[in-house]
Every structure is written in structure tokens, then in C-alpha cells.
Image 1 (tube, rainbow, N blue to C red):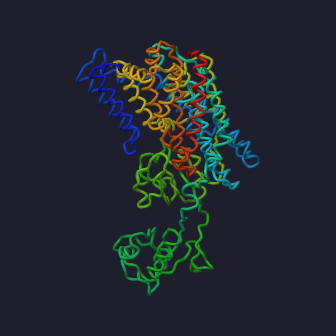
Image 2 (image 1 turned 120 degrees about the vertical axis):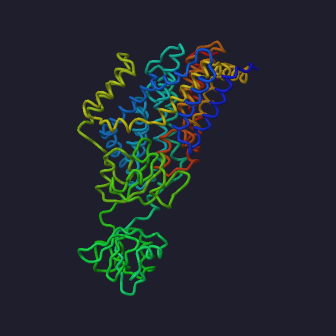
Image 3 (image 1 turned 30 degrees about the vertical axis):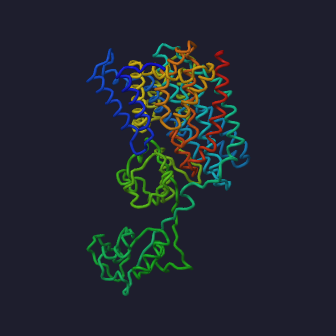
Length: 605
């Protein structure tokens, strides 16, 4: 049993455990946890100095090369998203889904995996979701059989290169800082291609059979709103009553847009205004509630565009020109961590919110405008087709409906060429990936593919703070000897096992951790521990570094494991158990493959 380290190391180890726990708490914003962790570390080493650790060392993590590279690649990927550079791919897939769905699923999985090896997988998922949902609806198939395999395929593809995910970049950068050889872009592509082939075959042939038919959370169950007019008759309850009394009669549920007294006269909606015979209340609500209001007020209900015939069985309510759509709240969108009222959603986008669905909570109901929205929430909206189209084309939010229209501009080929140049320069070693990525951002802005507003929206504050906090914890663990103690403890627990079994155990440990906490946090903290384990065993550190990369990327089994899993869960109407049903077998397949391949490729006895 290894001896306990000193007090500073024990405090850092305990803080690491608490941090990983807090990262799983949805009620606490990730960026808040990250900031508190950095602050506590700064105060700890300022008030209680330790060897060569300076408080300023933690501030340097905001300028870490890997973090800068990740931010630059996120911004460059945003250029592809807002210009619609991948639209031809989406159009091709949509055509195949109508004629040969089985072949289309295979092509979708392969292309999603390949593109994710070079691009952040979030814009790929955002681009493919509307296409797959629309194709499924048009062919009368549930989207749930397609969306999860596609999302998990992007996670597999992201493992293949150093720029495939932010996790890869962080681990490669930290390992290089610790004196290890810096991995080139395709150095670990071979084991991923082999293991990923088994994973993609499972997602193609088996996963759709394991997934039950799930309907999107709101599209078929949420009511449509209708614009209508309540005409106040002489014998109406509302005749002579104030507006506040009329609203109280409906228990405050009726929403009055405006009050018309004559052809050219509209009355202010003051609570004290008295209603008269002939007044018309313009309201918007569901058909059932409008009929309730008609009965409660003793008024006559008309369609807003037809004031000649009262609404009845022969003249039902109509909503001409209105369309329903589902808007998925994504990280960095104008609605993320804001309320509809604060975002001025109705007037800004000319759309009426009807319901909000939160995975695990259902329809939130109540006052929709005061609900603080999270990533993965689904907002059902109604409005003119043009307004929904404008929201989709803005690229600021993910819009799901029965169309396949995607944003596309004349600068799309230019954006695709810039991103291709970034990848090519980094892959050939002409430029370091950090330099190539920053150059790509500059080219995107100078050529008009990106605006500065797009740059701000592309930067993900929670991810940045998670990375900074994790880098700070990793640095503290290494410098205080905490990482060495954890490594010695791991070796002690696995004593007597062959090196391949210890390596396999490390992959499994990181896999379990990444499905509960942030994959970046798991990877950053795990990298110095993995190198220490290899040193304890007297073997090459490279396979143990790859064990961290592969394990931390296998966020297959839970919807909270990765942010795209939340998008998939919302769009497909999945339950938590659906991820376990598909994610656990996929995890076992990939874990077994890597456990066999890494010892063989690195000749570990």
C-alpha cells in the first residue's frame, strides 16, 4: 500500500473528487464549477505556498495552446455551419433515404464518422438532425431508429485523429508538456479504424433493432394555437365587466392580444377598461380552451380571418399559413441559459412558444416565458412559414420540422476550402495545428464566411471553463505528487495482473468516468495518472496515453456523457434507458477491441 502524500496533495485529490461530482450536477452551471475550482486552487497555493507552484501558474491555463486550438477549431467549424458548406452532403443523404433506407443508414454512419475525424462533431450532428428527421417523417418511419446510431458514429470517428475531439487535443498537448512524444494527426488512426469498423457494423445492423419506436417529444402531442375573435354579445357575462374581471372568469388563462371596439377603434388593454356589447377580443389559444372561454364568457367565437360565420361543427377553427416547428436549444444559442422573456423571443423571431419539453421532465407547462432554458430543451413554436424558415437559415438554433431546407450561401465552397486547408496543413506537418487553426479563423473572417457575432456564438464558455479547471487540477495533481499517488494506488490494486489487463482496466475506468462527468475533465486529470502508471510498470507510456484518449471518448451509454447526446435525446424522443440499451453493447465492443489491439500494436507482454 503506497504511503499517503503530503497535505497539499490530499487536498487536491479531494478537490478533484468533489469537482468531478459537481460536473454531474445539472443545477450547477458547468462554468460556475470551473471558476470556483480555479479560484480555490489559486487561494490554496497563495495562502499556503508549496514549492514552485505560483498562483499565476493557474492563470496561464487560459492561454494553454490546446485550449486556444480547440477554440479556433470551434470557430472554424462554425463557418461551415453558417454558410451551409455541408449542404450537398445532406441533400445526397436525403435522396438516398427515400429510395434505399438501409444503404442510406450505412452511408450516414460512414460519412458522419469520417467527417468527425476532422471536424467538431456538434455541427455535424446539428446539420444531419433536420435531414434525418425530415426523411423519417416523409417515409413514415420513427426518427429514433436513425438518430442515435448517427450520433454515436460521430463519437467513434472523433477518436481517429488528434483534432477529432477537444479531448484528443488536450491529451496530446498535456502528454507533450510532460515530455512524451507529440502525436501526429494519424498516429492512432489504425486502432480506431479497426475497432470502429466493428462499432459501426453494430450501429448499422443491430442498434436499430434494439431501439423502440419513439416519437419526437412534442410534434404529435402538443396542441396547435389558433387566432380567433370572441364577440361580446348583449347577454354576455363580459358585457359591462372590466378586463380584469373577464380574465379572472377564465382563471387568468386567456391571453388577449387586442380589443377592437369599432372598425377603426382599438381600446388599450388596461385591467380597468370596461367591455361593451360589440367589442371583439382577439385571442390565441388551443381549440379546446377557446371553446371553454366562449362558454365561460357567453361570447361568440369566430375565426380571425372570417368574421361572418361563428365557429361550429360546420365551421371549425383554422390556422391558415401557420406552421409548427421544434427548436432544440443548443450550447451557445441565444436561448441557452436564458428565459424566453430575456431573449425577447416572440418579437425577435416572430414566433409564438407553445410548449417546452425537457428530457426527463416532460412538458414544463406553466409560464413558459420565465423558464430558464438548458441545452437539450425542445421548444415547440408556431408561426408563419417564413418566420420558421428565417430562424432555420439564421443558423443560431436547431430547427426540426418536416422540411430539409438548410442554410446555404455563396461562400460555402470558400468555407469548405479554408477548413480543408487547415486540416491539410496540420496533417502534413507544414504548420502546427494551433497555427493552422488560428490562420483558418482569420481567413474565415477576412473572406466574410464568418462575422464577429458568429465568433462569439461559437465560443463555448462552459467548455472553456471545464478545460481550464481540469488543466489546473491536473497541474496540481502532478506537482504535488497526487497523480503519482493515484497511479501507485492503481498499480497496487491491480498487482499481479499482466500489463495488458492493467491497460484494459484503465480504458474501462476512463470509460465509466466519461459517461458521468465531462470527457475533457476525465481526460485531463487521467493523462498524468496514466503516464505515472506506465512509469511504475516500466513500460512505454504511449499505449496508456491512448487508453485515456479512447476511454474518455466512449461517451456512449448515457445522454449526459456528451453534449450531442443531449441533442439526439431531445430530437429523437429517447429515454435514458435507450442509451443504455445501445450504448452498453457498443462500449463493450469498443473496449474489447482496444484491449486487444493496443497490447498487440505496442508489444506489451
